[in-house]
Length: 317
Length: 291
Image (cartoon, rainbow over all chains, first blue to last red; front, top):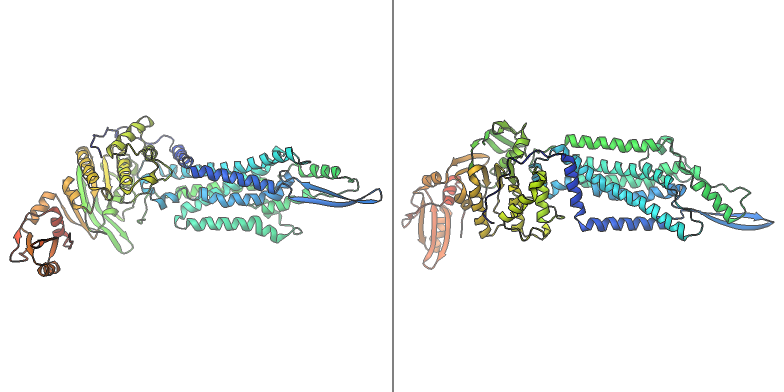
């Protein structure tokens, strides 16, 4: 250590201007400084891209029709990136995101406690509310970034398939955006906020919080819809308020059912019929607003966590 | 500037970590020493606004820090006993981050970071990622962050742990150079650190103040109570069992002992000048042996 006099800064140390933005900006800078973060984001994009490709024809439709006294077998498919296709695939793809999000956001504050960086920050002039909200917003921005990767993978793969696969329709950007907003964006905000708030309120069981969120999501998005099967109609309130969108999609899919009429005599006609149905704009009535409302309510939970967060603690770590 | 503590207590369940501690500090260095569990860290964390007192008040310039914590934090530098780092950051980025959190104006941050990096001798390694730092380098980064805002109140908990002897001496000299215009609270197990730099010494034991004095006064109180004697191995072991031995060194002609005792422990023992460590041992009444 060199023994040099310190330049006096005591008079210049002051309350932070826009502390919430500062806390968020530095938290983001910290994440972006990590190569691992970029590799993980790239890996997720690649995985979602491949998953969209693997689910590009989630519903194969085969029918036998009689043409001129003879029988002809017709085959068509529902495009995975169409509105109808997304209702079949999005809840499953969303599970991947929902399993990842708690790890991005839940530990925004508790990570400091576990790493013992908490004391360095809590003895700074950063206000408590700015610290909590800054950490939350940084996590939310990254979560939204991951949700955008999902949107990019749907649109990107949709266009790639359209250019390379015969009869594959171009994705309807408006329908994709609506479904992404109602199902993915709302779920991203909900999981991020819920995980962050509970983990901040209950730092000692933050791992359990993440596990509970993941298990609940798998149950809601995959297990319950599978249990209901294709013939059971779920109650309307459940269709509208299901945050995982598994049951919401289940409830919306009947309007995308393909009914073959006697006029369909060729595969081109069949594919045209499918196209006219699969690209219908989804019916937003009933479920869209409740999904956004759930996301909004989760923000209130973050507010509670920020208010309940204590800078000084009653026990030694 | 003035730090005043009145009747401060901290209780965990039925256990008191600190009892009825009162203290008034003005610019200078207060060395806090005491055995493990004496309450040093609890006291420092309460002053740093990290821990809530069970009873009592802490005032900074007359203001209760429970209600005016932000005023204290603006002038506070704190080095915890054990702190974490952000592995994504280099040393320089880490300091810039904390400088921003401490409210340093952005125009000053870079200059200030360079300055504290130079003080802790880490200028060359500043752009390396923190996980590549050794324990001593990490400790120096901790010291650097505590100095970022030119604190009026500097609290350092075991600051020299993990430093090599040269760095330890340099850090002590640095602390000495800072004492003129600020209050420094130094908690340590290394008595020689306190001896070298503190003008005031507080010994804590089981949450109570055992002594609040100066190193010179404590040494004066111990004068005539430290003895030196060289004996054979068997006698040395017997003396060790029955007396408070501060030093035990094997030599060619026997075992040289330094013993803290109010009475002559052996007929051949002669009175010697006490060290501060021996004065501390006499105060806390514990037996610690350096071989």
